[in-house]
Amino acid sequence: MLVLTRKVGERILVGDDIVITVLDGRGDGVRIGIDAPRGVKIQREEVVRAVTEANAEAAAAASAGTDDDDAAARLRRALGELGGSAS
Image (cartoon, rainbow, N blue to C red; front, side, top):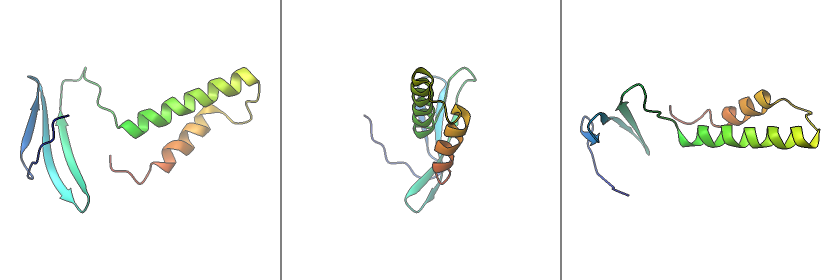
């Protein structure tokens, strides 16, 4: 893992076509901007984890025949728990 120290307005280049810009520092968090081609997926790790867990729970409930709650509702709850995270 490469660890860098950057100031607001400074950029990091990833390959030839991805630019990460430090936009703002807020307390213990940092706002960043990512400029990448449309085909490049950029996702927050905690959202991907929540979707994966909700899918696993839905599959387990379906195979057990105990679908007492739908997968969409479980996913909304999981994402709601993440609501305090920065986008």
